[in-house]
Image (cartoon, rainbow, N blue to C red; front, side):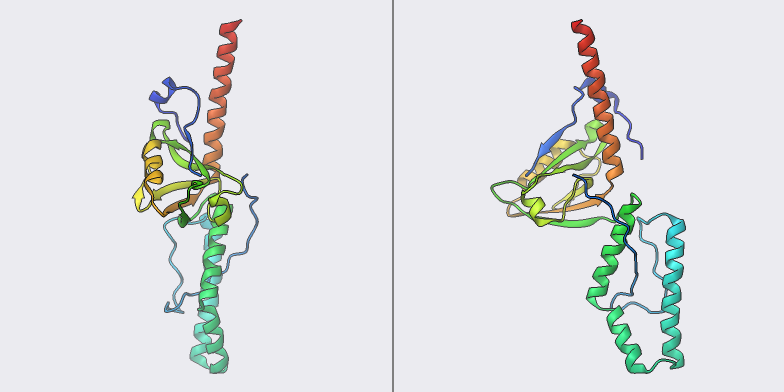
Length: 228
């Protein structure tokens, strides 16, 4: 996604709005496994989520999933596998542990492709702040992003937030398309804890930072020329 520059922002100093409220992690190739969650139908292929990985890889993934589900369904109908063993296998596949694995691996798969599902991160509000910086906002024609997680801070110790996360909402209030100051006010207004909804899209943050750096460089060259 290419982020354009709002005409009003050209009149501002070439400095991104960055607020502290408290290095990108290497991406790893993680295999994705889907297991039916408790109570779900074992004979139905899962529907695509609103935010999905690229279709080509997803189609292959869903095809494999459907084959596994169909096999389990056929074994149950034909009795080829003793019922106790089949039931034990289904209990494992429908356990909370496997559901957690499914969510984590799907998120990792999506993140590796520059896509991600929204997730909730809850942080305690202490005297030391929340331990992260945000940048961007409507005035910069940009989403609001987590630009830095302060080492040793609250967010770093909790481990749920990372640089490159787009901030979607704060304590249930959406900040998509909002000004930078709106997000700052919501974060400051939080009492004992703050619940954030974020989505990991680091490529957009990289584009935004590259744009700001280009503007800063142009401004430095302009100042150097005026002093010469």
